[in-house]
Length: 388
Image (tube, rainbow, N blue to C red):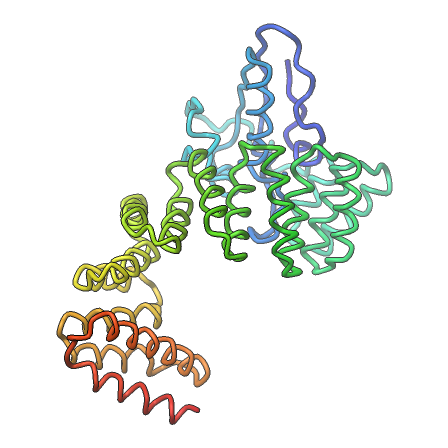
């Protein structure tokens, strides 16, 4: 049987049609049309995201038990809008993929979509996108169309309208994960972390195979200082996407907050193995090693991060300086502190120096036999007094 036209997938609820009993193959052509969107990643409508859409398909196929989805897509468009497919991440890690040579149907992406909402989400202009969503709602008001309009409202910072639309969509489709997820995004922008966590939890409960819901839930619970619950959410995400450096990094951060430093170290070593050219894994590894009192190893990790950071982070540079101090290089530590803070704005410099001073005092308390720390302390105190 044929799947619905892919360009309409983001605006359908339910997405998956009723499947007949017995073995069935569903053919979905040009699925790149489902994930082509010109929204930014921060505001992108969840139902235009490949991970969400195929989590819906995966859940339906698993529930059926004898159904299989066969899909075609243009590689170049997928690479721009849904590269997790090509990287075989998350729901795609067990997919069978076959490359087909030849130009294929070159008009499938370039042509203007027949669906008004699909066309709206391919425009680079958020105001024009919102107008398209409003026009679509004038014809028929469905839960999926209301969710799309709410996303466009978020883009233009009309959070009141977005909230109203999403509450309507939740009432229309209480078992659907998408409006719950989008509602959580609005709560985040209103800085209501408790409500955001409840919304992301509701989305994850309704579609457990969607990693984005678990990731956002974990991050929100972390902001609420509920690390054990955050870790449980991140572990659910990691089970769905074990090759995700961000998921592994999140586990490392939370286990560190829980004082489980050996687990945290193992997680960050996994991060740098997965993404050896990214700085954040090395910085986080350095911090965990620092807390373990392994200052030489921490200095090496911080230095590795600095060499990979396109704009070396001054906070991480001050941590490297303190590692050098802890390993006996007092002159190098002071030189690194001066270099790291010299070009900062006045307020940011004061903040970085105050934080560094606090960490230095903690280091001296933990390592009372430390020598050579007084010049760094005196310099920080003098600079802070001058900046007061």
